[in-house]
Image (cartoon, rainbow, N blue to C red; front, side, top):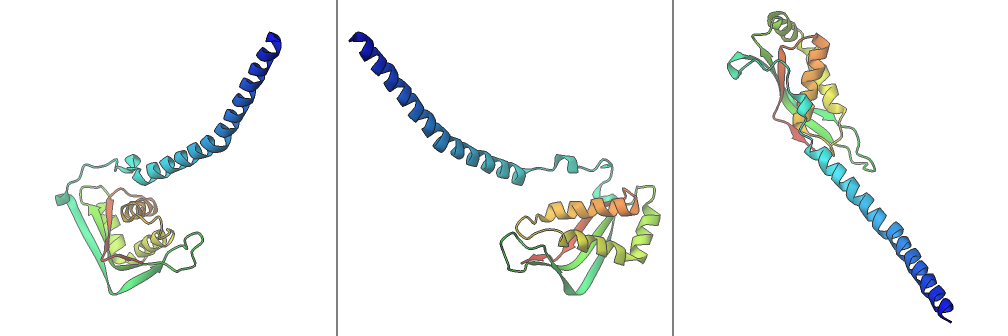
Length: 170
């Protein structure tokens, strides 16, 4: 009789273990996955762009030469559609301001080239803005991307800042 009671207790413990394992798999694991996804999203939003720092930060505000392009009417740029959203979103600009580092070796040639033919720089900046979605639009990040694309296009480090004049995100 003692062997049968012991067998029943072991069987009951095994069944309880099986039930708790099922509860763990079907309730706790999905909740943990959701928490992990939330933490990943928060971390990506808070991303401080540590790699975004300029390598040649040997300039001060006094070293900057700013070239501003002002539009008579605000330029309207279409943004990429959000996933599952049919509403068109756009970004309006009153102008663009490009800052050059006067201490850079190629400052004179690059600044004169952009000032003489600013349509190319405007095109690069507008393409960069239009490649983003309204839901994930971060103005500082887009301005930084514009600087990188201009630096790559003109093969220079004298372009240090792009500022959007009177922007409006809708």
